[in-house]
Image (cartoon, rainbow, N blue to C red; front, side, top):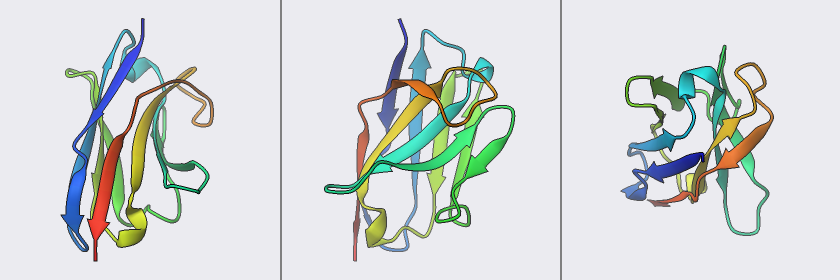
Length: 118
């Protein structure tokens, strides 16, 4: 049984930083693509970053967000810098169907809320 649990969200002032964590059980993160997404109220889910055999971040965040993983802890991280009020959303991590496809995900966490105050 695969489980993903996000943590690290919270309230931060604009310009600040947060590091989100996604602890995974039931699947080895080094063998699968892992991704971070976000969803704000009334908006579509947005793909942010993925890590598998390559690393990817969307143009909208690639200068501020960094995805990484700790294989020993079976955990994936999202370092977010220079946060803006527009980054306010629920952030979710997901596990891919294989290591190479950064667009298909079959397990999702419940999400962690990030609120950026102006």
